[in-house]
Image (tube, rainbow, N blue to C red):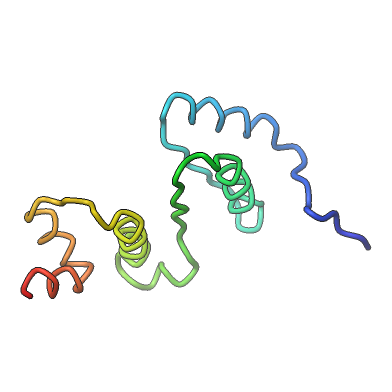
Length: 109
């Protein structure tokens, strides 16, 4: 069996069009579906088509279900790393430090 390189998406034209429309309207895009149905691939291909923008790709992982706030914590860290000059109010830093202990240490230094 031969695999196309790069593989092509089939039957996603309508979903892609909806994503394009949401992007143009500056709306959030949420993709849901069964495991293994190609959600991550669709999202990554769409985001790669937006090379003129800074893109953060947030995703849940199978082990996240057993760790409270694991997905949020990883995504907050990714957001802060991508925006190192972000000036957050102290109350936001205090609240985020509940999930991101390094913010609490940074504040005390």
